[in-house]
Structure formats: C-alpha cells, structure tokens
Length: 86
Image (cartoon, rainbow, N blue to C red; front, side):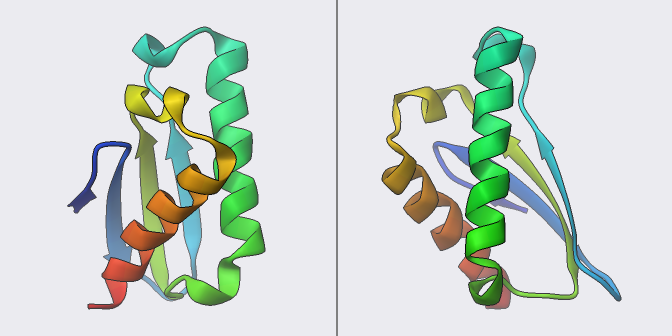
C-alpha cells in the first residue's frame, strides 16, 4: 500500500492490469466525485506506458485532491504509481 496526502493506492501482482477508482462521499457531491474519477482515468490512460503493468490497483482519492490543478494531480498520482516498481 502506498499513501500520500492526496491518494492511497493498494496493489497486488496479477497476470493483467486492472484499475479500481473510489472516492469517499465526504469528498463532495456526486458530480464532484465523478469529475475526480474522470480525471484519474484520463491520467491513467494517457500515461499507461509509464505505469507498472501486471498489477491490479485500487486508487482511493482523498479530499485534499479537490484543491489540485489537473497538472499537479497528474504529477502526484504518477509519482505514487512509479513507486510500485521499487
């Protein structure tokens, strides 16, 4: 498990790569949570080559993420996902 101020990521070795993205209700209303999930999916799709394959991931988005711009959110998430390799 990896944690930061903005995300918690659980991962397990697998034959293929799957992603689960969750946002707790305390983060905001449904349209806010859906926006964060859409952004996270887009970050994963556009940077798929930089992410370790053969793992299943569960990404939990924390409330502090609301204050981030898209670029900062992308940097924070990718930094965490790159730590899986180590």
